[in-house]
Image 1 (cartoon, rainbow over the protein chains, first blue to last red):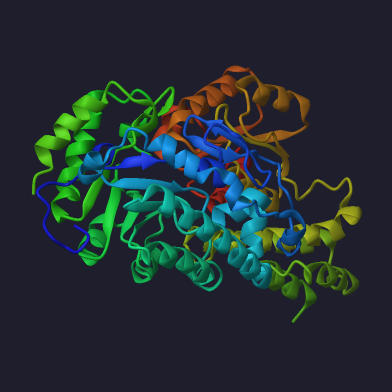
Image 2: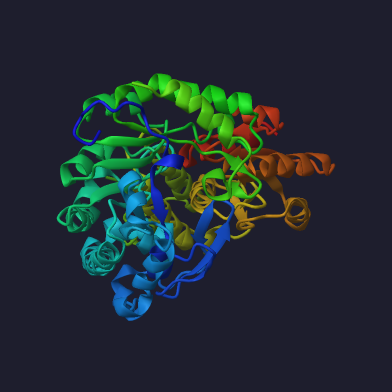
Length: 315
Length: 211
């Protein structure tokens, strides 16, 4: 799939990876909530963790050096987390299932975790010089962590999270992204790909304006690809260069709490029909229930979804 | 160029450091405070339209709102007690169970720029809190409820229903957020829906003028 070959079937994310997320819990954001290693307090919600609203460490990016103290990477327990997560993952299993390690809180999200979104977005155009300094230092930290992930987990894929877009477009202009964020984003991508690991970029929202940038940097999988983008156009244009992982209408009825199985099945079939046929697509269903995201919490509707997908995903 | 025109241009360009001085110069030139304010409201309308059409992005809109706020600071002492340009008070917040604030904050800034006094209840607002806030504040003309998640759409419905069932009147209810559509807004009996912060300000003014 990575090189444009025709797979036998379009995969389902739920069955695809051995997902590992404990290391980033220590290095970036605690999935259960609480303080991260930089002192930002995260609140756990049914749909993930977010920085505590209204609590910021500083409001002027020019001051970042006064407030941001980088943790000692040796102290973060990355190797212990890998041992825990891979304890029962034998070499035999490795041959059958790729290991994907999460690296949460990308450069833009990290700045927003410190300063809040409004201050961050203004900083990008008000004080790009300080942003450059901050992103350069933060990229160094993330690369140091990722290198340790690669040593400890020997992953096939690193999934790097940075939500750069809203449902209607990029948070910042593509020009601002390219000038202020991309140089450091590129360094992180190259740190991963230079070690033979596949870079999977998670970006929610309508980010189609920078997909070309992603591909150019060496990103091979775009995760959480939402229907506000022209997914069919992107699948066609980047066939052989980019795998699209997502496709589910995350704002539509199939993602409402308690959506009937019939609605889930219908959405599964739509994704197969519209995207699965292209050959560079991985389905990432977003089923929500009272406990949160079904991918993390489990859900009684998943077996019907899997059965349906396995009937319609052949190529 | 008349100073008032420069104020408009600099608000639109988001020049927060320049606007206060230009507002003072416009006053010195003889422009009335309320006319300068109206000019800045007009500029923010242009900014909102440009945002809605994708010509500008969130940072540029934020910078314009910040520039206008700096200009308003200069005018405030001169307009104390003058409510002729006010569209009333807007109670805004993110509904119960939802901790996201970026969308709500952007709408809040744009609504304030359109001429509302904004009372921000923050995030994860319990249903009864909306009613309390309407009672506690004067001249509430708009209640704006935000929800980002599909999982909190039921809370959006409950918030609207609680406000509507309270028996309180004199305001309209606006809803918005990533999963919200006009159809959903109609289903939950909201008075208005806006897909983004720029059009939220326009819709808010339109709703209140119809009261």
